Amino acid sequence: MIRRGAALALAFALAASVVPVRAADGTAELDRLASRDQKVVFHFQETPITRILDALAGAGSFKVTFDGPVEDSRVSLDSKDATIKEALLQLAEEGHLRYSVPGSDELVVRGTAGKPPK
Image 1 (cartoon, rainbow, N blue to C red):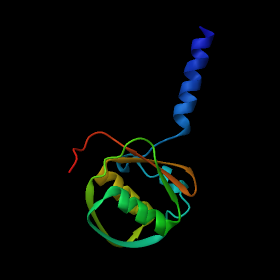
Image 2: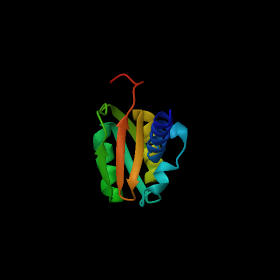
Image 3: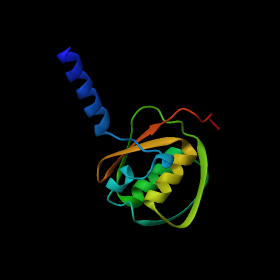
Image 4: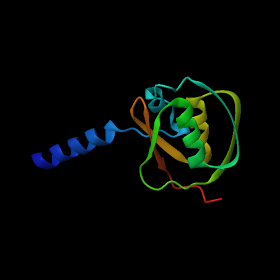
């Protein structure tokens, strides 16, 4: 009985250590990204998600890695005065993505079910 309780406690602790965030869930995870407040200007018309992530990573000097498959849907995003954080939140909403930020210069991207490919 004690082993089972300890295993459950460990499982909860591990689950709490990485908190992926979708746009609807809040923005706390992206606050760990060092370049979150950097302003960017962008216009993406029917552009693959991975290309948009690469462009934002280049502008913000952070590394993007993928945890599992991400549907590379084409999305349209446009802004003349957005922060990197705002752009990532918009992309998460459009592309049904989840993020975690294990370090101030690394973004881990996960796809979620729920959006058919375009």
